[in-house]
Structure formats: C-alpha cells, structure tokens
Amino acid sequence: MGHSGQLQQVIVNLIQNAIDAMNSVDSDGRVLQVRTEHSGSDAISITVEDTGPGIDPKKSDEMFGAFFTTKPHGMGLGLAICRMIVERHDGKLSVISANPHGAAFHITLPQMKLPH
Image (cartoon, rainbow, N blue to C red; front, side, top):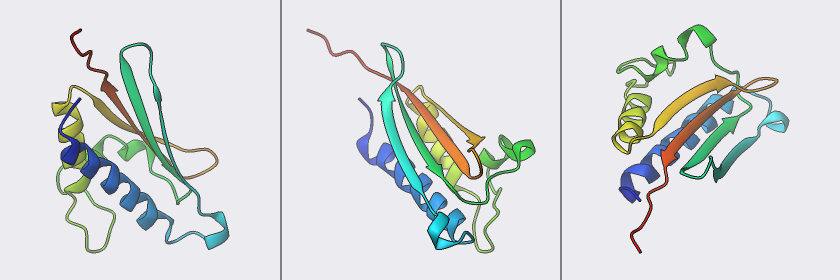
C-alpha cells in the first residue's frame, strides 16, 4: 500500500532515465528490463535495469543528491525526488552497475499487511 501516483512517478522516471542512458548505445544492444518480486515475506522489490553506458561506482550514492546530473539539460532533481518518495514509503532506492554494462536501480518496499 502506498501513494500510487508517487510510486508510479518513481518507476516512470527510472524507465525514462534508462531510455535516455541507452541513447548512446547501438540500437541492437539496447535492453530495458523491469522486474518485480517478493523480497522475503514482508517486502517487494522492483528493479529497473538497462544496458546503457553504466555508472561510475564512485558516484553511485552522489547521484541521488539534489542537482546532480549527467544530462546536458537536466536539472538533477529526478533521482533525489525518487529516493525521497521511496524513503517516505519506508523503502530503499539504490543503484549498482549491471553486468556486463549498464545500471540497475533497485527499489525495496515493505509489504503492508491488511487487517483481517
């Protein structure tokens, strides 16, 4: 359970970032994957993974800060807002390098139990 509009915006932003990242990759090598799964018995996880140029591991946490951008016309607020929304839902948003290249953004959200 959560604010569906906010959570939808997080997913849309991560997907749009992945598409933007893959613009510099040969079209035959572009793959975007969105996966959801149960994470233990009390959480769900969502992964948005691309085959773009990847991320600098030294900047993986910095990229969630306000005004950090790699886009020529970006404002640098998208990932900061995404992380804030996820954290307000008691979740976590992180990024790792994908193998062999690209980035994988991982969201973990608690699964709310409904009263019987």
